[in-house]
Figure 1 (spheres, helix red, strand yellow):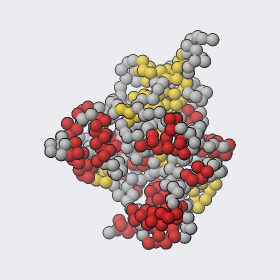
Figure 2 (spheres, helix red, strand yellow):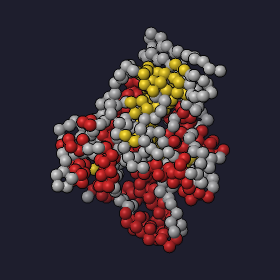
Figure 3 (cartoon, helix red, strand yellow):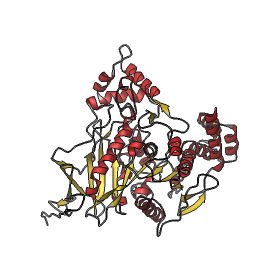
Figure 4 (cartoon, one colour):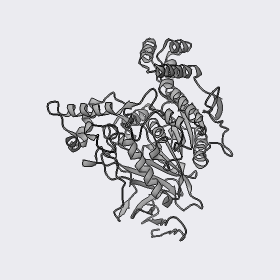
Length: 536
């Protein structure tokens, strides 16, 4: 049967918005039914998602294309052109190397699938778009909003990676938004010629603020509550959120935060704007050593050539936010100590084996010593002694890397927010899927993401235990977004994190349970070494 049908929902005169949702289809069996929402003078034409009752609006612009003279400028808020815009497909990802794409292909291959399950990634410098998953019918009361910021070391990753599709999470009673932001040299960069600009660095962070402003202006039209915005992210995405959740510019834009396997870029110290500007000169010299181009010439450089040069010059550079004096003025801990920050409550955690990988027995001890020496904080004889108790050297290496890069910084940040009287909860994700391959990888970096979104890839071994854990995690994350607390009827007991003394975290394993904070000795060493360094 073919036909045309339309459902219109019109707000009453006293309502703060007017929402028009339409559904059009040439055939209910041939393609998803289209849906429409009026946003800022444009008619967005989205589609029904794979989850019944949830609509998807994909590739929606929130800022003007940051190209030409807008490269390395603050994002300019997008304003509608009064046209019909297709919002049924994802926009290109921001400029990046295929690093994350190849990681996904490698993971699929390890689990017995084909690398071709992941198609080539379309990238562009014109990439400031977001995606919305929302109920097909207006809810009786506005729903909490969950905004996802992807990871990827701030140099790769994209808002629509397979595990970030928000239709199943939205079905739990939220509006889900995933956002893009400029990466690598396009988003985390500066140059001496930028000194006169109001925004001279951290462009990727400013992009995230621009997306949050768009959400404040428009999310009510999708059934979302702009007064209950929870920003959640993983890895570098979580680190970016940590910077924003104390920034005055984010006041009124975010209310709660969930940081997954990432946290504070300021442990043990923020990079300076002068160092970032020096990188600008380094890039110019790499373009032409004899006659380094100025900023205007760098802006005119082809984006793909710029990416190629930057990937070579800054191969080992981590693109973290820098202390620009405007958006990032001091460490998160100091800002929390001063109080008056935008954050209302925090949920934070790490995985048990963020960087575990099997090591050949003959190379294990040598690898351990090299890992210990390269650690920025946990590089002391005390750490060697503590980990020497572990008969599995590979496990000791993984413990060291997880504690140094994720767990101990997250504990410090949780302690700082708790001291600032911000309700804080901490988790430890340790679920390992069934099978030999999963046993080798353990609870790796990013392993929790399919559980949070309910998006378990077909090539991942997913049992009834995994699905049940996933449903509980989704309901818990949504309850936090709705109420500011992860605890609720039918949800696990989860005690708040305390700033001092012994405290507890919630372990997400075969089933959730309360445990003592992991790695107390390693994180005690971490805290004491940071304190000693700060006093010098």
